[in-house]
Image 1 (cartoon, helix red, strand yellow):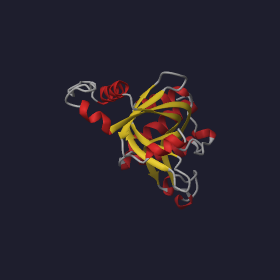
Image 2 (tube, rainbow, N blue to C red; image 1 turned 90 degrees about the vertical axis):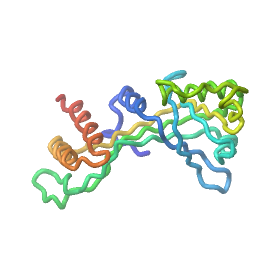
Image 3 (cartoon, one colour; image 1 turned 135 degrees about the horizontal axis):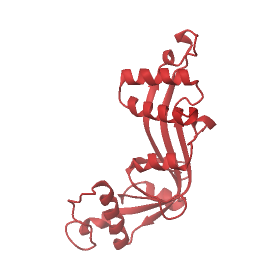
Image 4 (cartoon, rainbow, N blue to C red; image 1 turned 60 degrees about the horizontal axis):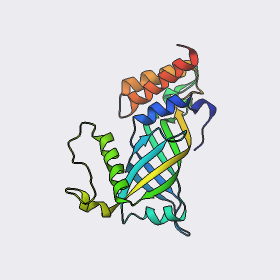
Length: 217
């Protein structure tokens, strides 16, 4: 992923806070020889420890084609993208230029976690992984805990495999026209507020937040 200096995270806190609000992404793994890469959408739980970048917990069905690829090469990438919006060129023209001279662009936030995958087949560890995942998505409870050999989910454990992704590197991008003048950025922010389509207000919030950090207000 190309990251221009003006699109980079301002600090580690920016991407950590953003990632803490997200729990769905795509796991990309190298395919077997002669095959294309594999991309698996998945819900996940991100944990900030252990290590400097933490880890990711998820699980997949045992027949998933990802497993042979992970056995051949455990290095994977988890890609999370959100808060995206299309920005028409008529919004981005420089001050004093015809609106038709503006460049259409995309706004988005993206965090890519470079990871080393570890497959979990031990029933007790797998149950704990699942319980931690459910605890993230259902903090209020309501679903029975997974216990190996016990109802209602124990008999289902053999049908899935757990996956722990140890994060070794993080690449974060917040593409919100940081290379444009404050005047152009504020104009785009106004247009996003007016349009208020899917993703527009979240993109606008990022742009104004980063603009305020850059200009001091």
